[in-house]
Amino acid sequence: MDSLVRMLGVALLLSATVNCGRGSVPYFIPGSATLPSCSEPPAFNLDGSTWLDSGQVTIQTSGCLGASPGEVFNSCTLQWVMTQTGQDIEIIVDTEYRILGRLCGDVLHLEGGWWLPVEDQGQCTYADDSAAEVGIQMEGSTLVIMRNEPINAGTGFTATGTLQVRGPCDGSYDVTFNTFIPPTN
Image (cartoon, rainbow, N blue to C red; front, side):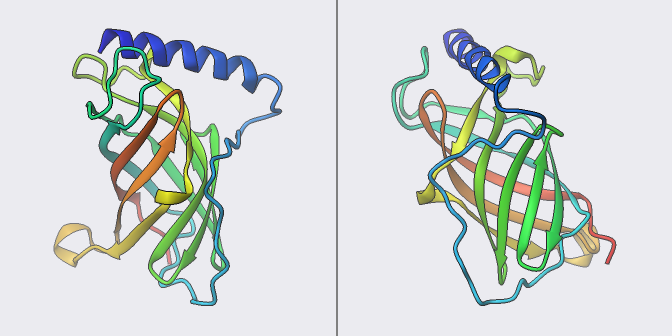
């Protein structure tokens, strides 16, 4: 794990160096995923909602020093803030990264990338050496959104899916998002 953390730290340092030339925050990190055109209206209005992610990252390829394909790491929670106009959603992750989304019915398609922190020795310190920037890949870029039952969270929502991501190595992120602040409407 320490080697993975060091490798991800090096990757993050390199990414930070590249970020300097990308302009102002929020950064957009491209992956291979693109937003589909769809005629199905959005099933929900998520405008103004704030979400928290949690899940596990499974390493799929070599490339992350000290981590082998098949190794699993717990992710650290970040804040995802949604602004929705019709089907299109802009998501600001951790106040620093911009992800684009399109809500077709109850399926949210994603494009872009963000900083994906993972636990370091069983805890989330959010230190620079605990993560790398990743891009969302086409083969796993959708989340299914469900309204929570009143007993769970009233008007809140949950979204689940497996995002395919690429940074210094490829991984899959089995993720659950829960609304921290539900939409006001």
